[in-house]
Length: 443
Image (tube, rainbow, N blue to C red; front, side, top):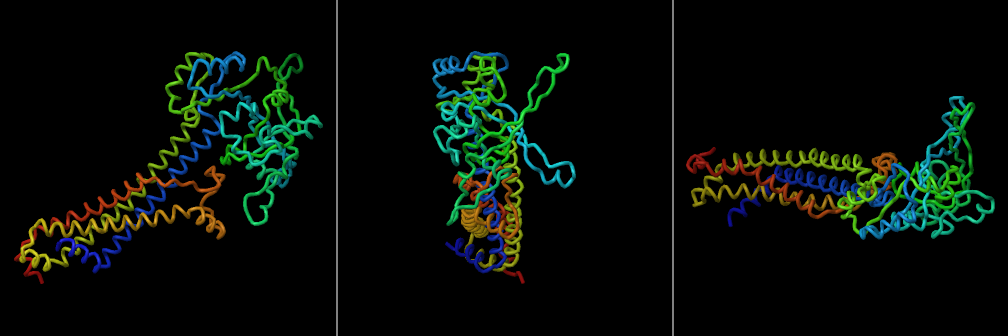
């Protein structure tokens, strides 16, 4: 009983021990916040990328069979396949007025590259989360439909929120706050340019540039500002007509496949590759492997670097408990003279170190939870003060994503308590080995 009593008494009466508790608290809190943000970042990345790329991507390397027959064959031969959607990709250039070029005296016409993705909406809605990303459209079930544009023989396009904010302007938020309303963009025209190769003089290839005005029929936000800024969606037949391609020869440039369970993807890849030798078969993780690996590496490196805060607090605990042993030499001698065993004296200082670790971990848990729950409010407050800590153009998201992962949190807390316990082992051994006679004669 005296062991815990003396351990908690030494903890309460010595300010330096409370500072050690504060060091453990800060280390645990920082690690919890970093791990929560990185877990949220990884989950958000996977959600966004999976929504845009579907589970599997099939890219043809040669002339392939028509989509209708191929889609029916895949769903018939592979029970794991839930839906298939065709896509046609082509590069467009959005023409806009650049103030930078005007200042340089080079005119003010500039061009922003866009990847135009042609889709069949009914099929695309089955394989990706694009319908969930729609912010506005006159006909959400048919977002490329615009009767006024059809009457003017204009083609329609879905543009992203990031593109609209960059080139078309941001509407004021509604009264009472909230997100901006984007309906004001519907019917606006976006000028694009495309280049096609034609036969020139003496049969030599020549580049012909053509300009078109596309009518905005909807706005979407996939929460990936960099990707969204360079991507727009069109009806696949309208895009094919814009480019001037023959449907029989250029029906699609990719197939997107959704599975009933993504866990079957790796096992299904070789089977699909054997069935479709003219296709490259990849998962969405294959196409974003470098990016996902970089996120994983960044998380590991941050955890390793910030773990030194906990190790530093361990050295502080070692130093403070060593000083405590020196200061309490006479007390140690009295305890030994009254019948306290070496194990009992050892336990006093081990318990002291453990109490520092446990108390600091619990307080760090509270600190980490409060900061994690309010991280976006803190970000907004700092932004209002002129300090930008999270640029959506850099980190791809408008809000800092977080995930509270209890196994990781408990691992951090147990690790910190273990460091504190081990830090108290050396001074505890020193105290246990003291000669009671010499300890009583101390001072």
